[in-house]
Amino acid sequence: MPDLLPTVPDATGHFGPFGGMFVPETLMTPLQDLAIAYEQARQDPAFQIELDYLLHNYVGRPTPLYYAERWTEQLGGAKIYLKREDLLHTGAHKINNALGQILLAKRLGKSRIIAETGAGQHGVATATVCARFGMECVVYMGAVDMERQALNVARMRLMGAKVVAVTAGQATLKEAVNEAMRDWVGSVENTHYIIGSALGSHPFPMMVRDFHRVIGVEARKQILEKEGRLPSMLVACVGGGSNAMGLFHPFLNDPDVRMVGVEAGGDGIIPERHAARFQGGKLGVLQGTKTWLLANDDGQIELTHSVSAGLDYAAIGPEHAYLQSIGRVEYTYATDTEALAAFKTLATTEGILPALESSHAIAYIQKIAPLLPKTDIIIANLSGRGDKDVEQASKYLL
Image (cartoon, rainbow, N blue to C red):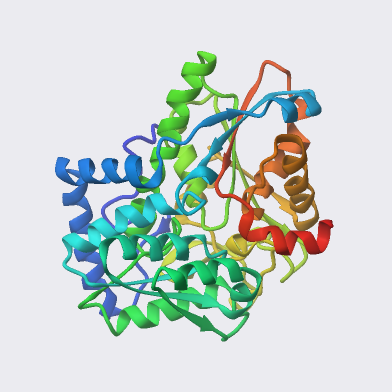
């Protein structure tokens, strides 16, 4: 296995053949400025001190690594730990990245922030940090997602954000990204775009990953303290891929640690009824980056579907495409039915409501843990809490 740390991307933003900068000329300069500012910030101790202070005192890090004892006993196989990102301020891992990026926006002298959101957690995180730093905030969200995530829309608006409904196309995450990019093209002088996942043009995939590495850094230290050894397996859901990259990245050079990313299988691997890019997807370019995506034979982006708004996206982050290509990370999927069942299982066995996104990882563990020896250890990234999904899940489960 190749040594991955210090890891890709290269200077042009490529993870092997994936990634890069595929954007309008208008955005090249702000993206290059952002890359320079980020490189300077990551080498500036004062930046890291401020970020660490806020992550601890404002956001609530470190998050616990919780032994799911009853669930482990019920499944009868590997020992299962949950990395409790759901306990963070705003209820999901998204705040790690939003906080890091708004500190960068300050360095760049920006006064206005835009973002896209699917499940709403990134929108809430962005609205939160904008309120904290007194910046104007505009969040683009698909009209379909606004309906199924009404609670998060209300939270954003309460914190002063303007939430713009996007009605074009499928009216979900892809269309929200399109609108945010259109806004940015016309407002680059005073606006920073806080992308919510490890996708888009360079330097966003690298930058978002780095702001979420704290998840895996903490998990590594915590499992060594609790068990005296590294885990056998890491499991995380994968939409764009930020929570998974955050958990996986600090373990990439540990060949005995198996890693599994779980995509949204929707109604099954049927065209336009799922969002599992490695199941019948192809290499292409979407919204600034070259990666695996779901497209038809003519190259047109296919419709996607998932019960979880945060996984309902046609492309995967380019570093995930790279890790899959070299065989370092395995990718599978869970269907809507399996994710909903997992949502209820964790609620009834551990008293924890996982986000529907995280429930895809829980669903995979439901299947794999009983097949593994009791000496094995699994860490699942519980990337968000399920309060936002209760109304939707109740339609199917109650």
